Length: 225
Image 1 (cartoon, rainbow, N blue to C red):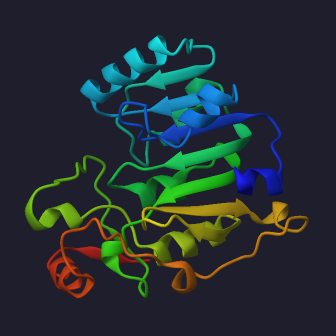
Image 2: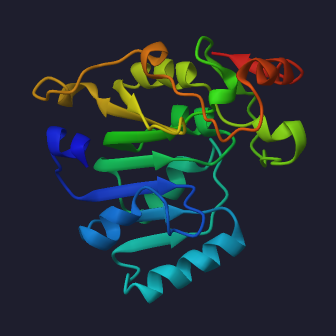
């Protein structure tokens, strides 16, 4: 909320992709406590059903938040967003799908968010712009060593977001989410553009040391971008 207070809010609109049961996702506070409107996407049917129940129990109607059960990839992302009717400039966008995050964010061209939150994979380290190879059917395997194989490094998301017109501002204290602000909104704010190496936080919830994880991911077909 501190970032939004600095750059301002225009339409009170959001889109969030990868919300699980909608309870702890990034847009829930905006939806429940500040009366924003938007759309949420969740690919897992079970989680989607839990989310529908949660929103209904909290009095959220479909005209305030469209919750869609859709499996997102780089090819369908723009058409699915278009179906929500929330296009052009929006205030907040969040992406966390434990998979093709880099490739989906790269292809999005139908919205122009003011604030963007992207999940990064700290397992890929702080130095290299790495992402998983694109596979439209990718599903995260959260067992054994493959649980570290998903998404993109902070450096990769920093480079891509810069090309799309966004500056990296900060990451959260747990090493999960990175925050980006559209460049044209930085001029009149007190926010500072940061480099990934200066704000990188390793996700200590991962059950391996960073050096060990680097050895693990060498076994897989990671892409330098």
